[in-house]
Image (cartoon, rainbow, N blue to C red; front, top):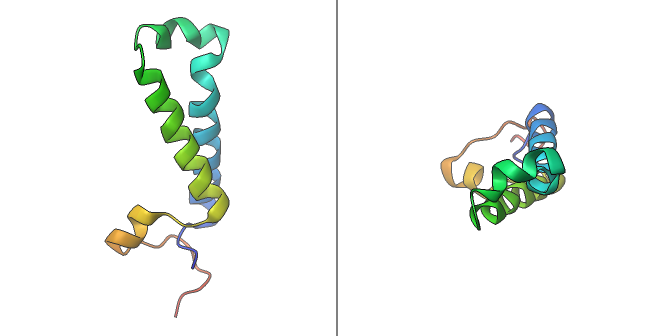
Length: 74
């Protein structure tokens, strides 16, 4: 059951990809180097955002009853 709409999915995909690769790109590596192991938390958030974009299902949305998707409405 999908609960993530098209615009939401696109934004999650873009932001997830940025969060996934930004800590390892040379221009941003110095910024994230000061964060220590927290940069891996940023990467984990990026992975979760990409996962929810690909599956079109967000567990937090399901928990709170939020739906940004028109498909599957009853």
